Length: 287
Image (tube, rainbow, N blue to C red; front, side, top):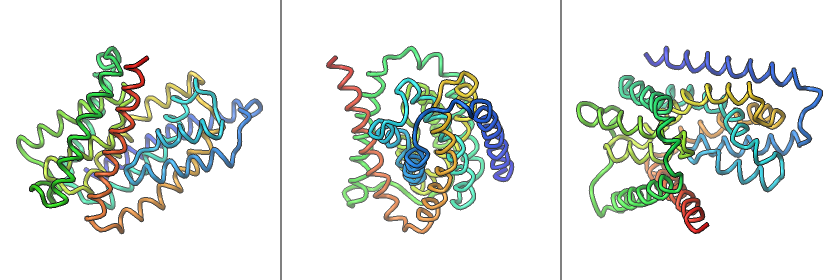
């Protein structure tokens, strides 16, 4: 089952790569006036931290704006298209190097995909401010519980690599919701980490689950952006290449980290994401 999963990911990567390359060649004579070096650097840094579970969108958006490498209107499409292939690479790598029970992995990945597909119309109508504020507060509370567990103030977490019964059903339902929330701009990585930890699984298991979920979601969105031309072609092409290098380096670093360090990484990632969500929500609230 795991073999079938990474073969599907590989086919999706080939589909996106061929579509991107074809579109790049078609517009080669009128590409955007930005830097190969700067956009390549953005892709390497963003995907290096993405493979560590931090997420690439916030980092790359900051770098894009600081280095003035694309128009704001093209940012959503550029981020999706540019990072699809590196994200698929993450999914393929981590389902191979991190052990997780196949049924748990596949059901959670499919649930995230179904959530994004079926929930897009519903979630898109919800106020973004409410979603960000709610998720931000929820993540801060989760981080508090995780920190208390790590410091020995309360029991929690675990070493499990699979879920059964009610916990599996809960994980599938929550990952469905997280997949739907991605359509509203809420990243899946941090809340998925929190979910895995809360259900008593090993923190390392979050990596193949969250990266596999995103690898399953992003190709369809990217194909749409490419066909509509709503992305920065030059930047996307550069990031797709350098991003893979960043992923490979980070993947082997993650593989060598002790479990204790991964738990601290989970806490830092969740606090970081919660802060970003709350700041965005409060800015909207006070406008």
